Image (cartoon, rainbow, N blue to C red):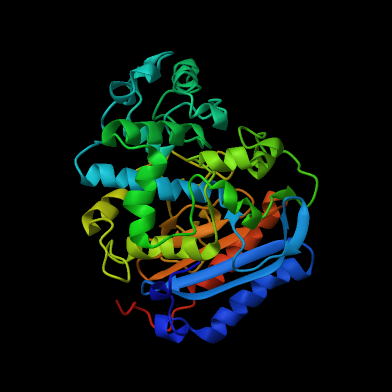
Length: 394
């Protein structure tokens, strides 16, 4: 549940136009009403507080259909990456990590098969050269299997030479770095350093078993078809694996967090408001956030399918001002500085430092990627235009 201190008394109290918010709700509900999706959940935050939160449709929980409510939790897939990123950013702020460090100097087991020159920055930007690196989720808690996986991985391209999305592999490396540099288990570090200070009690990287009865099962609304370029790591079976309580318990750092849309919207509020929550808790310094959200990929680091520059900062995407923000998951109305990370199946999560708006959108139904893209553009564009004023009050 959302803590009362993070909930605005009304949309207007958070600087959100309630009439436009209703239009956004109607657009989200439309996909449920016409049968495109089984359920969908949307949340908007501004000025540090939740301005709106609604859920539509039916959630399949444990194989049984039940009404989806604001209490329903969803697998947020790669929107998890930004949450892990924020924890990694604390290492830079604390002087425990540098971008130019070689991963092999931190994780010696990683050095084999030509990976010895891979840098921390390359891992964060998905240009590290090991996008297709198998790692069973349940291997994480067995240290020997974990290190054997790191050693077994091979490069498929020269590090730094191109962008290819590392769906899960990069973030297994990042949380290993986190553990070695902090001495704290990564799920605990995320909870202690990011989630609890932000007041995000209903966002889980590693789901407690007792909460499985709140999580909407993911499933394919239509038979899945391979995307251009093939499945890669994100196969239909890999998606359905997140219905397994054992996999949910791991907290896969590249895509296994469980949350509701309100938690996603509120996660971005401190990050777009100088690093401070609505209650005055500092999460990160403003200069750390600026450092972390600066676009670092080059023009030749392009989306392999669409051909536009990928606009990657440190484990998050940035909307950019080149007219391609909708292709990066931000709709057409967000500012060039908006940043965040979507997730498989059409999860939406970003914050905009210019407008002060942040969004969380969750669904458990998987459809054609073209449908997902169109839906994301429509919802993101409506969300980005909700502000009553041009400049946030805080």
